[in-house]
Structures are given as C-alpha cells and as structure tokens.
Image (cartoon, rainbow, N blue to C red; front, side, top):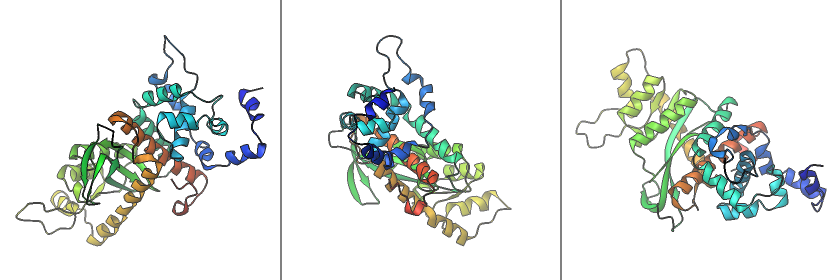
Length: 332
C-alpha cells in the first residue's frame, strides 16, 4: 500500500478529500508538465550531505498553491504545506519541512527565470499567444524592512512608493511572456530591448505596442528589422522641430520603406489594445507580484518570477478547461 493511500485512510472523510480535489489549485496542476525541473543541476542531490527527500516538481506545485492562496515566505509556506489535503494534492508523500522549503526556494532563485520561460513555451504551444504583444512597466511594492528596495516615483499613479519595478511583455489572455525585475518602475532602454528580444524569441507577432516611454529609435528599428510593426506614441521631447506624426513608426516607415503604408486609423485601432497589458499587470499582482514580502533583492526577484509563473499556469489551466478568458473560473 502506498504512503498516499495509507494517509488517505487518516483523512476525516472521503467527502472532505473529494472537496479538496475539486478546488482550483488542484486543477492548476492537472495540465502542467514539470519534469523539466529535474534536469537542472541546481536541484541535483549533493555528492556529500543529505539527499533530497522531496522532488522539485512537488515543491514547485507547493509554491504555486501557496501563492494562489496568498501565502508567502518560507515559514508560512511550510506551515501551509503541513495541511494533509494540501500536501497530498501537491503530490508529496509526506509534508516537507521548513528546511526543505527554504532550500528549494534558494535553489530556485538561480533558475526561476528559465522556469518561467519553459512555462511560457507550454503556453505558446497551446496557442495562447496572439499576434499583438504589449510591453509595459509596473511598480512592485516591497516590505519596509527590505533594505535593497528604494523609494521611487510612479508617474502614472502620481505617487511615491517603496520597492522595485518589473517590465513585462504580454500577449493573449493576460499571458506574460517575457519580463525583467528592475530597481524601479521606470526601466532603462537597455532593459526594454532585452525584454523585447526575449519576447520575440518565443514567437514573432505582427504588432508590438508600448506607451511613449518606448518611443526610441533602437526599439522601433529592431522590431521593424524583425518584421514586427512597433506602435508607440511619438514623444517630441525637447526638439525644436517636432515631426507631424502620432506614432514614431510613421516616420520610420517613410524613411526606410517605399512599399509599406499604414493608415493612421489602423495604428489608432491597434494602439487601443494596449490596455490589455494593464489587465495583465493586475492579474500578475493577484498572483503575488506585489506587495513583495521577501527580504532582499534576490528573494524579491524570485517572488516576482514565481508570480509570473503562476499567472502563466492559470492561463494554461483556464484554456484546458475551456473557460472564456472574459469570465475565467480561475481569476488570479
């Protein structure tokens, strides 16, 4: 008799277990392929010292469950995973200790962005991305005693906040497909270019939309060279002779192409889709993007990318269950 079967006999009622088996977090794991976690050297058993009692897929499912339930930090996560029906639904043979949880999170920090990329690839294979990418930066609030965070100004909200930032490219039904953790909401152009390249490595869209902060020549020319139409409002900045355009792409096409023409109405209609990225940011925040309760920059970055992973998993689950993105049963 397996350990799981023996444990099930100790559950107060079969109905209780079946009720948990029907919960949203259990359905999160139903369609996930997490075997790739076993391939990372960072999770390999140490040649000297203790071997791993729990495998990375089970621990990763445990963190996804906790983040979905707004449980953060190794101590609260370990406490949550002591609940019989929780650790059973995550695939454990027995509940993990706090040391096991802490060790896994510490190791995961080294590869969490790569794990995120693997999950994005699973979303792309399912056809969850559309022909329009959107890029935007959002603020990430931190706990007051995170000494690596700083005070920053959020020009959109017109207020100061203590924390970090995150630049996200999204597509489809609120699916983040590329991201970078930054010291502040306003990211440098180098970050925008890196995240843009990461997004194009997943799939090449038709359009890529950003606000006026992305009105840079390098961003536009790189996208056009890749076969993507960039749409960002023209920002005249301090020029004494501003161009008579609404979008930078109008000028770039006029200077570099004799065959391509884009109507202003088409650009306007496409740019109006930019609000989807704000809904993506809100959805990721519901998955743990903020406020970040972790201490230090490294732990905070890991929590941000775990939140991004959870949002991709929610999108995959909703798609597999046939839920309409406009009325998701999994609302995170």
